[in-house]
Image (tube, rainbow, N blue to C red; front, side):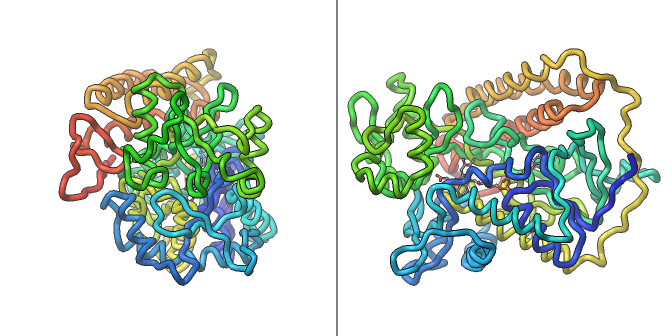
Length: 528
Ligand code: FAD
Ligand code: SIN
C-alpha cells in the first residue's frame, strides 16, 4: 500500500493527543491514531479529577509546593510553575468544550481534595471525570474538518532516516509504520511532525489500574528512534485498587479518602495510617501504598479495608455514584460496609525526555502526557496532576510545532514495510507465556519495595527473554500482541536499569539497600 501523508500525525487519542490535535487542526491536516477504539486509553478511566487553583484562598505557590513535596524534590521547578499557572485556562477551555464540571450551590466550582494537596483544588465530574473529558474532546475532534481519526491502527515504529530510500542515520522522524487491524497490513503514515501521546506502561505489572493498552509503546518507539528516556524507576502504585477476584483493576479514587474515607486493618478494625504519617490517609500516595503493603506483608493479609460508610448513604451515593454502582453489582454496598483494597501499579512517572515545549531529542518528534518525563512529577506524581499535564503539554507541543513549521524537514521517500522474510506465527503461545512472565517478575521483583538482589534477578530474566522475543519478532509477521510484547520487554528493561542506577530511596523508588535520600536530586537519564 502507498504511504498516506498528513501535515502532523498524533499517535494516541487520549487527553494529550486530542488536546494537541485540536490546537494543530487550526492550521494543519492532522491524523490521530489509536491502537483500538478512540477512548481506549487511561483518560476515560480517570475518576478523581483535575488539579487547578480555582479559588482565592488557594494559590499557585501552594500548588507548586505540594507538587514538589510529593515529587521529593526531583521536579523541575520551572516546569511545575509553568503547568500550574496554565491550569485555570485549561479548565476554562474544557468547560467551553462542554465538560459538565460539578458546581456548588453558589455556582462556583465544586472542588474535592486528594492526598498531598494542602487545599481543595480538584475540579471533577462526579467520580467519572475522565469519561466526561474524553467525550468532550472526542466530539470536538470528530467535528473538526482538519482531523482524521484513525482507530485500530497500532503504531509499530517511528519512521526515521534509516527507513528512507536514500538511507541515512540522521534521526529526524517522518511518521510511523502501523499495523492496520482492519486490513491486517502494515501501513506507512508520513508527516512533517509527529506527536507521541501513547500513555503509560502500567501493564508491565501484574496488578495495574491502567487499561490493557498501557504497554509503553511510545516510550519503546522513541527509545528505538534514538531518544533519551528518563526516571523510569518511578512507577506509581495507587494505594486503593479494589480487591476482587473477578474485577482485577477497578480503582477506588483517592477522593474517597479526601472526603473522609478511613483505612483500617480488616481483622482488628485498627485505623493504621496515623501510625505511619501525621497526614494519615491524605499523605502522598507513595507513603500510603507502602503503609498498606507493610500491613499486608506483616500480617499475611489479602487486602485492607477502606471505609466511607460513616459519611451516610446520601453523601456516598451523591459523591461516588460510579463506584457505588460498580460495587453494588459485585455485592459490596459501600454505604454500609468497607471496601477491600490493595495497592496496584497506577501511573508511569518516567518516560520520553521532553523540554518545556514537548520536544524530544529527535527532530520532528514531540511527546505529551503520560508517555513523557517532562519534569512535572519528579519522584512521585501528585494526585490529579496528570490530566493537567496532558492539557498543558498537548497544547505546548502544538504551539511549538505551529511556531516552527517552516523549519521542519520535508517528507522524504520512505521504504514500505518489508515482510518478505517473515511468515505467520505457528506458536502464539510464546507471546502469552512471555507476557505473563514479565508482568509477574516485575510485580514480585520491581514493585513497591525493592532490593538490589531482586532487581538483578529481574534483569537476568529480561536479558534471557530479550533474545527469545528478538528471534520471534525477526521470524514472524507482526500482530498487535507481538508489537506490545516487544515494547513491554523494552520498558521493563528501562525500568529495571533505571532502578539499579539509583542508589538512594526517593519518592516512589524505595530500595532496602539504600534507605536514605541523597542531598542532591538527580534525574536518571538513559541514552540509547
Ligand atoms: P491515554 O489516555 O492513556 O491514551 C493513550 C492513547 O494512545 C490511546 O488512544 C491509545 O490507543 C494510544 N496508543 C497507545 N499505544 C499506541 C500504539 N502503539 N499505536 C497507536 N496508538 C497507541 N489522572 C488525573 O489527573 N486525575 C485522575 O483522576 C486520574 N484518575 C485515573 C484513574 C485511573 C483508573 C487511571 C488508570 C489513571 C488515572 N489518572 C488520573 C491518570 C490519567 O488518567 C492518565 O495519566 C492520562 O489520562 C494519560 O493520558 P494520555 O493522553 O497521556 O494517554
Ligand atoms: C484517583 O482518582 O485517585 C486518581 C487520581 C490520579 O491518579 O491522579
